Length: 75
Image 1 (cartoon, rainbow, N blue to C red):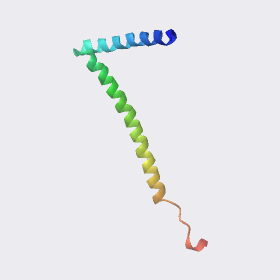
Image 2: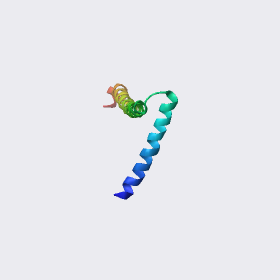
Image 3: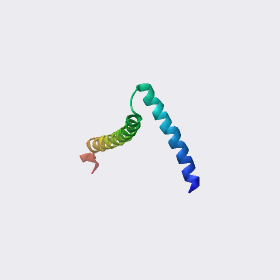
Image 4: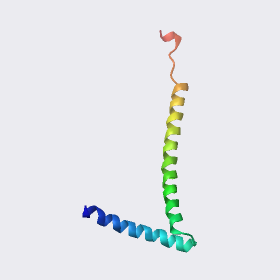
């Protein structure tokens, strides 16, 4: 358990310090910077997933429209 908590505390301390320094430079609270990073992460991941779904839908529609139809003379 100690093996997990030691690196976790290290990264939390360093990560929160980065957010605190950014907040000090901008003159806002650190909590706003942290929540902004979280929301930005969710938006970025959500945009990629939405783009994937849109492209899959578009390819499916393209395949439905442009299917190769057999000719009447091939029978």
